[in-house]
Length: 153
Image 1: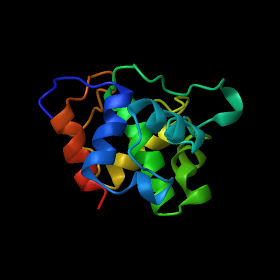
Image 2: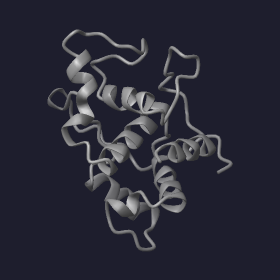
Image 3: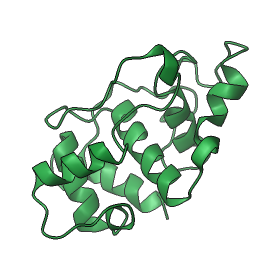
Image 4: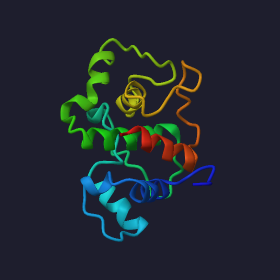
């Protein structure tokens, strides 16, 4: 948990080691990071959910660096799955999208991760650093990610 930035694979390993969230979604034995990635991908934990009809498959890659937006995507998909939100996980784009309005200036309604970013903020899983902006391209450290995981409870 001392790394200043982590990859998607490391994010999944931390999740598997620190929580039982993934085991609620798929069977985990002594999965390798590569197997965790395959299982997370096949269960939709790495795909964007906003504006699905207007995007190509933007699934996260195994060695991709985790930014705040990437982190929000994974955490929102995990939260939505655990809480069984189904169609409620895109409520933000349904409300704000038609108005082309956003309560967070640097998260646009056209973003494939619009619902994820707003969802993790509203549910206090992640926070706006300055109370206004999300700073989605900022890399997430291992300790920050672990603290976000704890906020899922």
